[in-house]
Image 1 (tube, rainbow, N blue to C red):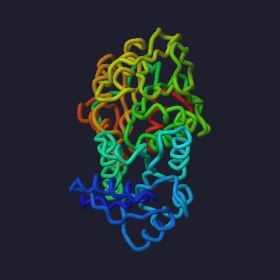
Image 2 (cartoon, rainbow, N blue to C red):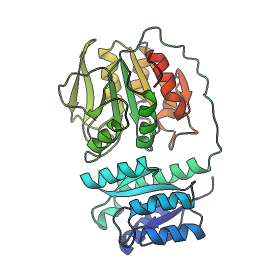
Image 3 (cartoon, helix red, strand yellow):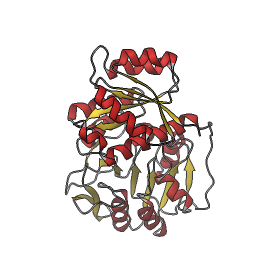
Image 4 (spheres, one colour):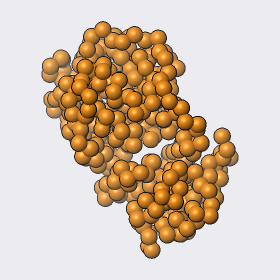
Length: 346
């Protein structure tokens, strides 16, 4: 893969410089342009090829939301990462932007000094390089065969894990699932606490299943999606026919809270293994240990394939471990999940 070509669009010259230095500390990233507003970004994109644009939301002359459709029209292959403040309004704008075609978001640091935070740098580099590879990857279709047989017993719960690139993947998956899923759906997406209620709200607006952040102690109802709140693990308790959500601040697992693994471990235990796992795009291997527990107890796992994943870390980990019933392109996953759940077409 060639170096990721990145344009930075932010009205602060200090932020542009700091992000530029951070990105170019990686030899696989090349900053091709730095501009101060959306109008300049649109003009620059007509002259300069970029794989990824880091686009601020609040800017004079032309803001990020106004610029987004113009950038995608100028180059339909460019991937746009929205730089959003850690506020409810910033989170809502970022989610709206992703539904309008932005590829992902990064929580924008509150100060110039915090731009140098190692976690922010890791997240930004991960997303920039993943999206650049995604754009340069040759198109592939079809599934990757698996030796795992179909589950004998019907699942009692659908459990979804996702991280980098997850919001866009979730929008596609949930729309494909439709409304008529006769089991509860639990979901862990690596995301800050400010963003998870907004993500739940936007998933709920898709016209499929209702979605909300899980509340501690609430009963899990069939055909509804329960999202782990930011900074809390989502645990499943109870027994068949009476599942409940439990939220904990137990230590992070796989450097994450919420983490997919505790959700899967608990779901497997209370469902006696009858869990269907859907693992979407994400960095690292959160969910590997939990999926192994599910599958060894008689459950089933479906993973997003490498060609349609921004980062094939989490789904790749369970695929390489031989835990998958199928490894599928994102657009094909909902149909396979409905088939296993015996649900009608969306």
